[in-house]
Image 1 (cartoon, rainbow, N blue to C red):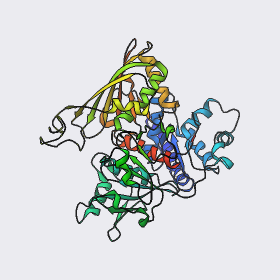
Image 2: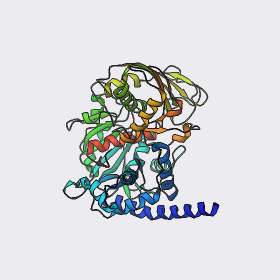
Image 3: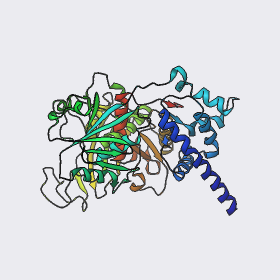
Image 4: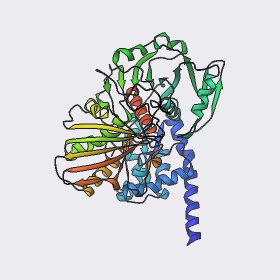
Length: 477
């Protein structure tokens, strides 16, 4: 039996190896992203591809073999596709359940008709993106934009604006992009052109612009036109302050923090449809708002919510002190790596900005804890109707798989899941089914979220929506 298992493993390895060049070519030449149950296979290793297939059993309850997906992928590659996202895992399972009497090639061609012929998305050039600030979120957004460069007709990271910290500033910025204590090594190569103040990451030229004042920069001098500027500093939160970025070459500004006043707070998956062509200043709200709003919307739509409380157990951030020292905020001056720090969260009040029709009152508070990344939101909700743990968990599992929120909500049933398991998650939050508590109309749910990377993915999704680079998904359900 042992030799049979090993032979099977080697066969699956061989298929995964054969997949890699096909997936890469589709991505580079046609802007087609290949997925398995919402998880991208682009730039993934053999082991990562096999693990993604293995994971399907946990979330769907049905095994998915690479023997099933490989012929689907071959059929996809044979089509003249436009920019799109193709989930070969869902196609494979759907074909196994009901082939409709068609061959694999016929079935795939029919399912992907919306991405071929006259239905193809056509893009004429890339959308320029500028990052203002290069901290934790800025560098992760940079990694994602470089990763998603595709054929070059999507999003193009053109520049980063920072204050010059030292004579060897560019080298230090490159080093911080190259290696990260939490998220690991940059997946690729980074070169430095000091004469031009340019970093070249996986062939993408990123101009570094040194400025202490956004009103002094003319982006057209660097060949940048109609760009989306992502402000990662959080220095300006209202329309007046963020308008400083609307300089020559910049068409729209996106803030990676909660916006104040009349600035729209966008949580992708929930209210990106409210973005209008005339909106030139937007906010992505906070990481916690992105974590809780999608599941709150899903639960409210299905069960109704009367009221609730959100308690976040949040990793420490740069806003806190390493050791006890003065801080303008209460408690935040105490040592972050040594203490649990009780503080406030604006996520509860931010819910109304993302879901103005949400009628329930949600209170909120937060505890900062001595971990560097991955947080948890605990939702204590009073529902409009009684339910059970099983019903609520089944609903959230289906939501994570088949709803419009599947990119925002992930689902886990692992008995041993802990925070580090979710470092690098691309979802806004992960519903922990084993932790769910239900008593009649009272439901307590636990949501993990990578407050750095998961949030950065949400930011990039909003950038894609603004620019029109958010390509259609097949199959859609």
